[in-house]
Length: 310
Figure 1: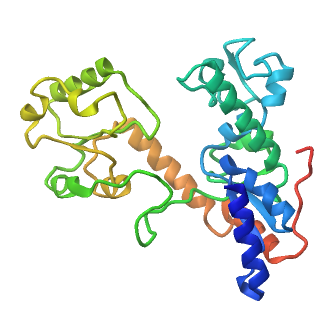
Figure 2 (figure 1 turned 90 degrees about the horizontal axis):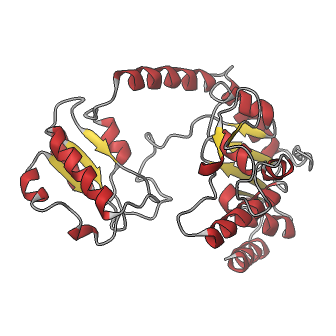
Figure 3 (figure 1 turned 120 degrees about the horizontal axis):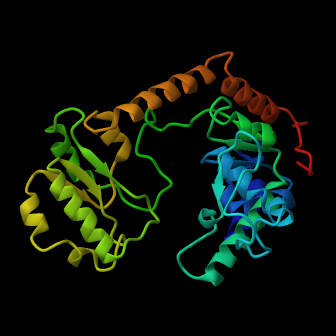
């Protein structure tokens, strides 16, 4: 892929001129190798991080974790079971570090070194943009001031379907959702990576059945081994129209319908965070100012270059 990307940019810039020339690359931090290509071709480069800033701070702090004796040079725990990068930041567990995968020690080592390589490449970026806002993770941004929060980037108002994931949305549930009362549907989804053994899968199915509530359950084809045969005997027959099982849900459309059943405390907290996020996007808000800083820098030929030591 690096070779192909380099050739695409090179060919485009040799043939194009003016506004059609690629002058800046924004790359996901998980593919920071692309920044090395940008640097080689004289193209300005920016990193984008779509998750919480605390996780990025952790990934880019592995040298510190090694020096502090929390992990060894292969990413395995060797110190206390919990640690904190800085005051006010979330307490983290060494048993749940992001490079841990359920595929053995060799796979974990590969993931750890891949993340470290991305972190080293990230230092080439002029900016590290983060899908967060200052007030949400203030201690983290104080610890990692080189990360620029530019507001939550929502797709709810975007025309067309979201892109960037590998599973096709199953919209067969939408008419069923329209029949459900407000705040009544249990939504069950475990993302794109979680794997259950068949015993766990059956327990979850029986729990949903026993709840007596309508539910939307996202069951990827690889959620468990032989998914089609993993359901408890007679489960789907007993289910009737009370629940729907889809391979990948149109989550934003589902949430927009208001039928999901949420805990009152979670809903109250979500409303508070929504108000905070909205304030950050107002003209004098922190994210508005950060985004404006980035835009102005991109318009300038003399953008701020992040110090190598940061």
